[in-house]
Image 1 (cartoon, rainbow, N blue to C red):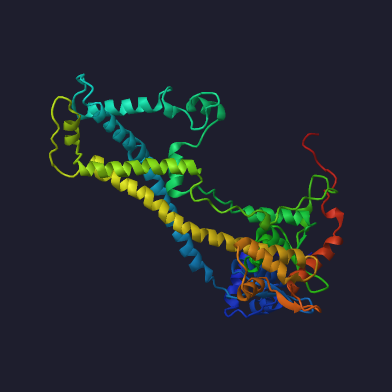
Image 2: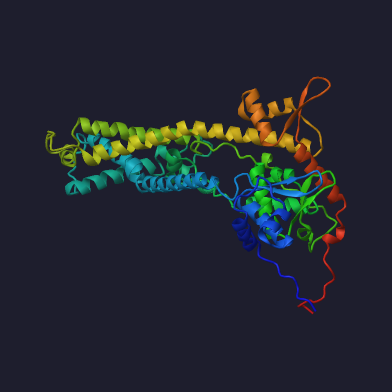
Length: 484
């Protein structure tokens, strides 16, 4: 009786290969790895698959049908430095944005609403200074300010105030707060100000989203998938799609196969097994070019909301400048509102509470959106470039699955629709080279682009899919049931 063969963990086999293949060749076969390391062929294959995932390797197929592992950067990760810098900048940006959002929320009522009400209250107090002969029961500056703010709130928001009614909404005569109850919850004021200053919030992307879509695509395609299918659902370039598939093969018992035409595809027979209806065809997930989100808006508010916030902030800015012009310190404010004495301003320092604080915050609440507006144009350009890449990918994948060339006019149209401008020859050549395209001149003199690797891969996957047994998806008879 012989012992059952033991299998190394892929990561352990990969560690052996990294030590023994100290100078990885441009191309490595499973036999090369086995001879150099002394590993069994099955362990060498598992180790190479793990390394392909870890170091962004790629697969190549010889005319004889042999699978070759290619490591363009060897067993190094030069992209990690760039990625680390991007991650660090993202973390710094997120921290700054979080701090700014906290400041905006914390100072919202002070920097915008409360200051606007205070300045309005001061104006109302000065207007009624000559007409109101009643002696105030309030004592000191705190009492004066509290009374003025309370009056301002009352005259601004009470149900009979004109400001409580929406502009252009005289259909039922109901106040705005009553209509809001009927129309449902609204975006809170502080969130609209946050959007005005820092832009709309961005939803976090699910890190497993691409994997889930690929797995759904695998099941919909009878467990056989080509690289073009992976690119269709993820939008990833080849240099990222290859290592991702290597990782999926390790995690989901997949294998890399070679078709009779030399095309390479991935087989995941175990992912087909289902407790559902095996005769029903799974629906393919949406393509990446059909899921392109619109460009992120500058604020996410309506034009009227932005105008109202800007006007309110502008009012505070002008009011703070007026406070400087009249030396409106807290002491002078008390003298100004005293109805029984002639107001004589006394220069006793710069107005900080009613001058510097609202001035600085009002300027900041204008400068930050202005800077974002400049950066927003660059973001829209990057969005257009990505949309153009996905548009080219759509043409490439669609035609490659039919084993036919892509007309140059179709590629130009895809780029023009996404970017709004005609692509240059250099730009078009760069986009085609990204997917391994080759120009071919037809008999009529027109240029078409062929993508031999993607075409042969798609053909090989399609041929194997046609031969896939239905039994792969079926479950066996129930041998044990806890309900019985």
